[in-house]
Image (cartoon, rainbow, N blue to C red; front, side):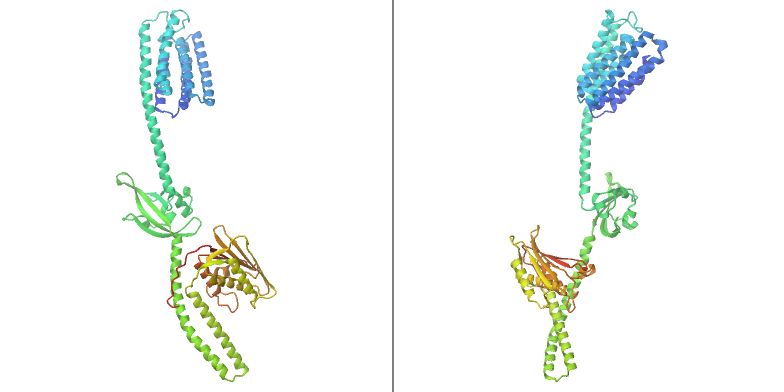
Length: 564
């Protein structure tokens, strides 16, 4: 009866040893499952062979043991769920298994029972749970129970079962063989268990190091400021780092597995080349439909023995650099044109002065009728306007002469307002308000004459923007970045978005008779002081200019204009 059970359960135990859980709790769970498997197998075999080997009384006892084993397994399962004293549970489960095995052997033939091998399973599990110490304790307990079972039956303390013969031959040999097997299995299984524990510890340590190395490599890849993309030899994307996703705007789940030609719009020549690594630049469309310019470097992806398994694409976002390059080229062209225009204006101003002087001389010497006199006046006005345009343009084109010093912006504002009140363009319908924090210092390092020119231009423009009257509000405040902000707000007609974009361009004027250079000069002065100027406006809602000046600044280096 026992042979089928041995053939089924013993390989199961050996296979369970090879699959080593990481914690004693996992092994306790395996032990509960193994116990249920053994008991269930025993139940099935017993039922199948009932009529041949087992009488009714022994079968009843065996069923009682099986039911008790199920109940004990359930209790062990509950304890495992709610208690963390796993070592104690291991000893308790081993003790219960010893009693169960003792009972099964007793009702199935005593010392000569085929189920004596269950002691070996218990010893093996003890070596796994409790290592060498547990294996030796379990082997000793198994030996003592084997001897005790024989003695209590011999002394008549327990009745004979259906399996047990009246006289057992070679009892000493069987007991000695079992005891030897118990300790041999305890020794071998504990050796194997210790070896597995050591190997498992080393494996866990290596896995930890490997996980740390993988995390370290992943952090390096994701910390790169440039984009990184890898593909296989066929060009299908296998990896995309964090920066690559941020630059392109693509979701990595969408890109991985796609062909690199479709992702970046590469041609076959750009994707593959005989001379690796190689570099090229290309404009692509990001996920938002915006054109960006990227600089790519393509390298082979090599593994051991220089075997190529794919390609590595590293790239940088060159969009802003390209914009700066275009701005620099445009600025260089503007500088060249400005120098040329300044030279032309300088050459025009001298003969214009001679023309104006000759005109005034003719005007005083000739007898003119009223119509001729009116024409002469128009010529005089246009000559003066042309002269002013040339003078303003030369002021804009030539380098700014700095005399930096500590400027009290509150005092400078009051002086500008006093000067503005005497302006002929200011009427009774105009109102001027200014406010500042009297407790805090509002000073900056700047050229007072240039800053006063800025204030005057902005105030004068604000008054012109309100021909029918209105309020000009001036406020000063310290910013959190250690700067001083000055705001000029009018209640005029305001500016459109297009006008705001062109307002600082030369020769852009919103007023009749203006040269369009006033705000260009203002911008030039503010930028020379390392400050900034912003405009906020809406049509019909007035305009606000905000100037921000640093409290401390170094002497600016100004390029000399050869024509001025």
